[in-house]
Length: 114
View 1 (cartoon, rainbow, N blue to C red):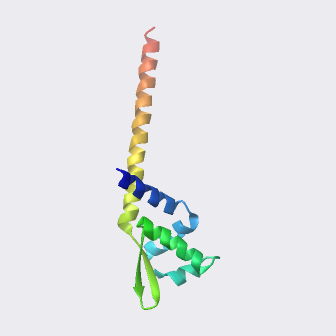
View 2 (cartoon, rainbow, N blue to C red):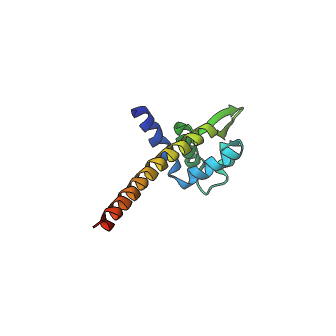
View 3 (cartoon, one colour):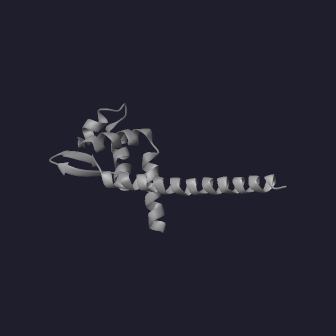
């Protein structure tokens, strides 16, 4: 259970940053070199590398070397796991709302019987 919680923490931490979400969008659309990614942002190459590293540690991005370049691509399966976690949370939330609705309708029915 702790391993799953740690994985969820890493995924949501990685997605909490706007720049990392944008990098993820780009690499899900196609493979990019880290230097090409860095050219898209008003920050240093090292800063972009750090963002890429956070995404990689979370398992959302995969890097490979091609000569002197580091190429990054998105991991669709990891993104699907995030979607699955969110769906699970939504189902819990919907279940609670349904129970509240049931309690309210039961309470309303008992008020009408008085």
